[in-house]
Image (cartoon, rainbow, N blue to C red):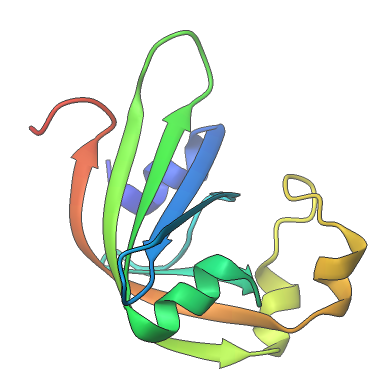
Length: 127
C-alpha cells in the first residue's frame, strides 16, 4: 500500500516534533499529512513554536498512531523544503471535520509547510 493511501484510509492521532537551533524540542498534536506525492507531504501550521523551530532547523518528526488497542502506526522523518504564507490552498485542503481549531488559530497567520520524507519507520521497531 502506498504511504498516501495508508494515511487516507487509516484513522488515528498524529504528533509532530521539531527542535530549534539550540536543540530545544517542541511537540504538538497534528492532523494527518497532506500528500503532494509519495516523497513530499505538507502540514498546515499556525505561527507557533513548531513553525518557529523550523525557521532555524528544517528537520521534524511526525508520529501517527492508528486508532485501536494495538500500537500500530508510522513514524516519518522530515526535512522542510518550502512554505507558503496564508495560501488559498490552505482553506481548500483543510480537513474541517477532523481538525477542530480555536479562534486564535483561525485569526492568525497560517503556513502551508512542505517536507521531503527522509525516512519512514513503523510505530514500533525499525524494520
